[in-house]
Image 1 (cartoon, rainbow, N blue to C red):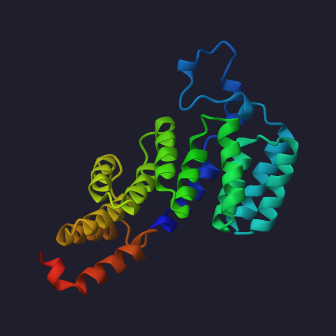
Image 2: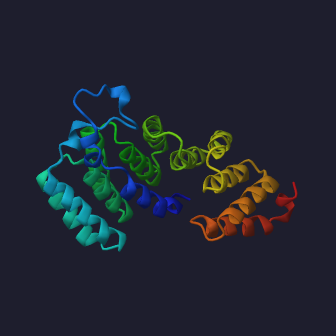
Image 3: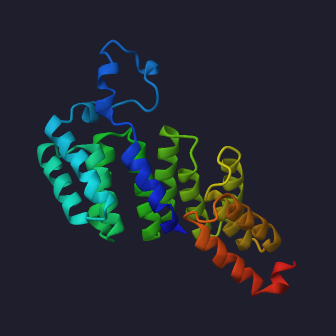
Length: 241
């Protein structure tokens, strides 16, 4: 299940509002409560322009899966500013995708040390810890991300994975149900189906899988949904319980 969110997470990382695009709208006199979204840290506002430009240049090769060039640009940016949170996070994400989990963790943890308000770094850390089987750590990082960036579906989805890996299917089911109220038609339907299967509630799982395929017949989770439906159909005595 973890691999299903790649394309959505990539879009989130690359289209997130960048701190330097907001700096002119923030004055030193602005009280914190007037800043919309997460507070922008000094570390993100203070990134040198050359480092910003290199980060922007890293996006194109990254989207083309040219990890070598993307990492080269990001490393150049980090040479200019070693605590550049966006660059550290994107570099960590690339390393995660390449299964370089130790340097990925180092860079992601450096990102949150540099900017404890940068929710996306916590979310990628949560994903990394799920891949490592560190499910309690994954939940902790997802909770931090959710406190800073509530309302989406990717954070509860990652938490559902953690709880199901811990065989806490009822908790995952409750979490997916709650998040689906504001995020219908997302991969949370597939997560909910997995939780229902863990609870031997096969007919209900079928309903959720078919609902997802109706919403997104070619979505990121469509193959997983088809595989689960096939699995249930091969166990008719369970599917009719």
